Image 1 (tube, rainbow, N blue to C red):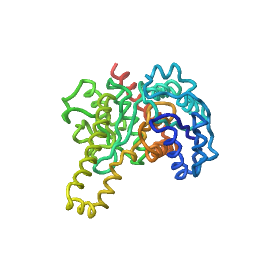
Image 2: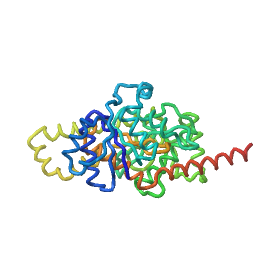
Image 3: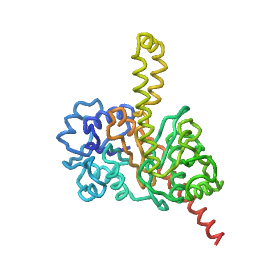
Image 4: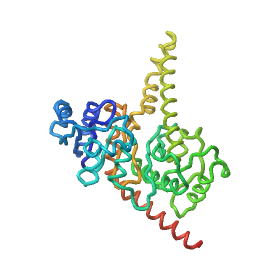
Length: 343
C-alpha cells in the first residue's frame, strides 16, 4: 500500500508529518510512504527516523498557504506538494493521500483530480467524534454550506458505508440533524430527505431526526447535516472539550485536598483523557470521490497525524471506495425506478 503525504501542509510541517509517518510505519510495516515537498527540508528529517530513512521524496519548492483561497490554490497549484500528492492517487501511483494543509484547497484539488463518483452530486467531509459510549460519525463538516434532500440522502448512504468500513459495525444507525425530533420540524428539504431515508428498500438504518443535545449520547452512529451546521457542531464540540479540560485542571489545582483527590482519581482521569483526546479522532475523509483523500487537522502533532494515516490505511484495506459506489448506484436505481412508476 502506498500513501501519498503532503509534507508541507499544516502548521507544524514538515516535522510533524515526518514524525507522524514514522509512527505509522512502525505500526503498519506494509505501508510505503511517498513524501511530496521540499527535499532539502524533508530528507534530513527522514535520516533521523526509525523506519523511513529510505522513503521516497518527490521534490517541489511550492506549497499551498493556509491563507490561499481554493481558487488561488488551484490556479497556481499544479507544482505544489498538495497537488502532486493528490495526482499520485489520481494516476494510481498511490492508494490514498493525507494532508494537513488548507481544507478548501484540498477539497477543490481533490475534486478536480479524483472526480466525483458516478451519481454523486456533491462530495462531503466526514469525521468521527467521541460519545458517551463509543464513537459517532458526522457529515458534512464544511464542504457544502447549503444542501437539498438529494445531497442529504447521498450523505447518509456514504456515511453509512464509511462508518461500516472503519468499525465493521454491520448496520450503523443513521439520523438527520434537526432542531427537534418531531417529524413536522425543520426545513422542507429535511422532511423530504427524512421521508425517503425511512423507506426500507434504500437499506439505511434510519432513526429519524436527532437534536444537537443528543449528538454525544451514543444513540446514533452517523449524523447527517449540511456543511454549515456540521462545521458549527464540530467547532462547538472542540471548544467544549477544551473548556472541560481547562476547568478540570483548574479544579484539581484549587486546593491541597483537590490535589490529593487527583492522585486517587488519576487512573480514571487518564482513561477519560484518552477517550476525549482529539488526536485519536483526527482524520476527516472526503466522501464521494474516486479516490481516498484524508484531511488532518492543521495544528495536530505527530500522534494526530499518525491517526490520519491510520484512517487512510483502514479505508484502503476495507475496500471503502467500491462499498460507497455500490451503495450510491443501488440507491439511484431504486429512486429512478420509483420516479418512473409514479410518472
